[in-house]
Length: 345
Image (tube, rainbow, N blue to C red; front, side, top):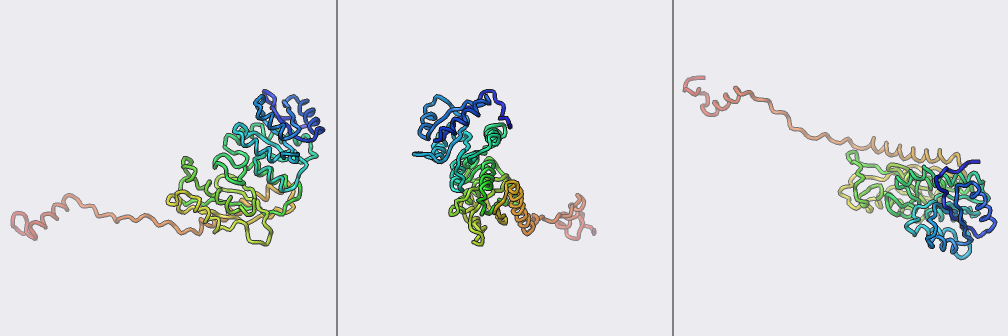
């Protein structure tokens, strides 16, 4: 059995499900390990009462999606609206595997999504992944679920960790009539990244906003892969016009830049789409690599085709004059062909 992360104090966990048998199963199994302080709620309303009561500060949530009155996604939104729980790990533990539920959960800020019936060892691994040292490192870097963090809140932008879990969940359900794009920011050769810029002057943030606007009709999720590169998963029909039209994306990108004068020469590049149809989970890493490699080749081509920057104009060096040459010149200007004493030179 995969053991959960050793912690000094047990993780305070709230499990919310309208099935009493599921609550009892999880309570017995997790409590027996000794690393979890498990609290239970039979409905979303009961969960809200426990959360807002202030008696217990929860470290992690396991939420079912389909519940009466208030569903799990709506409950997740309510949890994320509480400042103290804006980044708290949330795993959706549900029988609902349809794409619309998966997307809604990750869009609202879920860290992971597990479908019933689940493997208990796998669940323990996932709990450790969202609450262990790697999770702390992601938090330190500002990589937060739901797109919050470095760029503020941008609609449908989620973290890379959550994006990978999102793709993996869809792969489990063979829901992959999708295409993966990589989008990269191309900077001018003389531009220097300045992390101290105001958010409105951050070209990567501006590109994130442009991607969000450009993909609004598709409703797809995307993430910052790293550096200046984004990954976008689209479910637009194959054969139709590509979701990300580079010229339109750049128009939105320029509009999102608050100071165009300082951002001259920045450009958004779109790589070739990679088909994600019926991929198994091990194939996903290769698909991501192919998408990123495509936009990197696109960026290199743009560099190769860019006109060479003209060298700065320089004034030709003047011949140096010795002191004797300067003296002779002055004498000539004063006396013409005569010497200073009136005699011939």
